[in-house]
Length: 335
Image 1 (cartoon, rainbow, N blue to C red):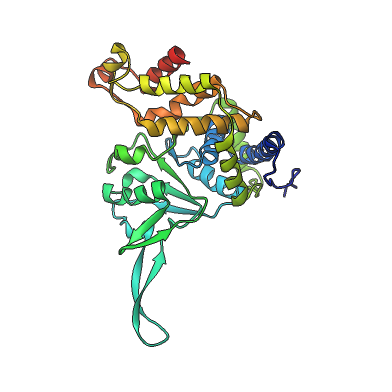
Image 2 (tube, helix red, strand yellow; image 1 turned 120 degrees about the vertical axis):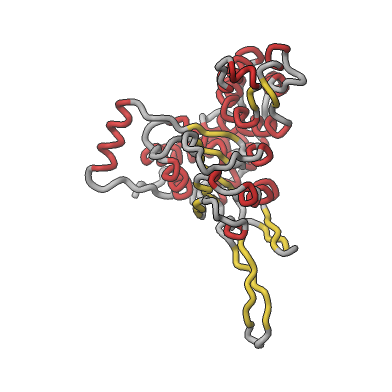
């Protein structure tokens, strides 16, 4: 097991010292993740940014690209209690939130007792979320937004921190249910996992089929993650960065964007997208050891934060446009 080189983070009254200490701790966590998750480093960074922003992530990729391994490793490295739910067409909402059972108590009387479901975890993995019915998918809506569930009229608070990472297969759509836009908007960003290049794939084969595979080890704790999330909300952000961010989000809407964009987009991101982008830019800056975000952070995060909150028009799809390209052009124009 690798020994930690930096003491656990404890907030002080010196924001600069806190930023440096947090950046060092996050660097350790990133190195521990990259030692297990080989390949695209952006996937690891975007996953960390999602958690540091106190958000939820939607991981999209074909089978066999270590999506499940990524979430499991995140849970270990960040010291989070992790549970997994395999979404299937017969999955019911109670299978996620929990249910009440009737049983005899010590006094011989019958009473209902609530049995918590897998949603009561710091990190919940919803594997192949689009294979469950919309009714079951919507069971996560309240939990993701309000951090509590209601069963039989009773409220049950979820643990802190609480994050959902859902996976989705983009190619096998038979027997799947499209995710409602309201639920897609709950995800802070969409993380696309692509095929590794030749060199990386060769390294993966060697690392996973020879000898004993390397195992992840804890680096951070849930308390440190919460402290980092609180610190990120206090990080300064320049007026020019905020102006670029707001302009970008507004330009992605057909009602307020340019005429050319209005014909390409059927619906665009709401204010929650701007909130997500504000937090994510701060988290990216801290992850790179900077105290304040820049316009480069906004440009780098525009696609993963906005793409699942927008839809191309029929005309744009007929012309072969891709949502990523539309967002990239908007970012180049307004940042």
